Length: 118
Image (cartoon, rainbow, N blue to C red; front, side, top):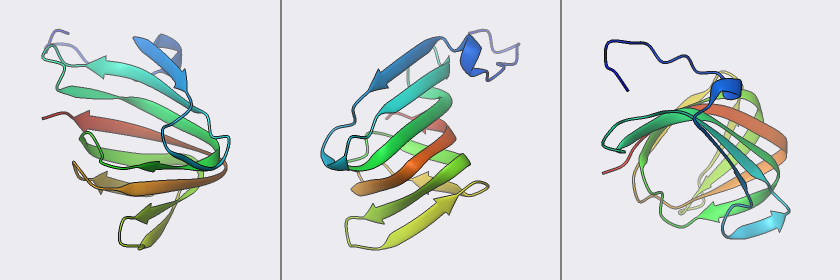
């Protein structure tokens, strides 16, 4: 990717689309889709959009430092210590590397994100 150009974030022009069932399902049948719109040459930074359908799943150890903004829908994110955060459209959060969290999604949630992989 040439650093002299802007990257337009558009799911229809994503460089990669990944649909899957998240790991460690806690409840329901959550399905996720990731639209990767940017990936740095060294593969340490990637960014795009992510959507999750109805269900709950746990990330035992977050694999990156991530900043994300909720675009649509709602989710409750439960931390390893039991603290819960209700996230809705307009909210932005930072998820640190290695943290345990459980996403509880009713209906769906869609976010834009940027991840830094150490």
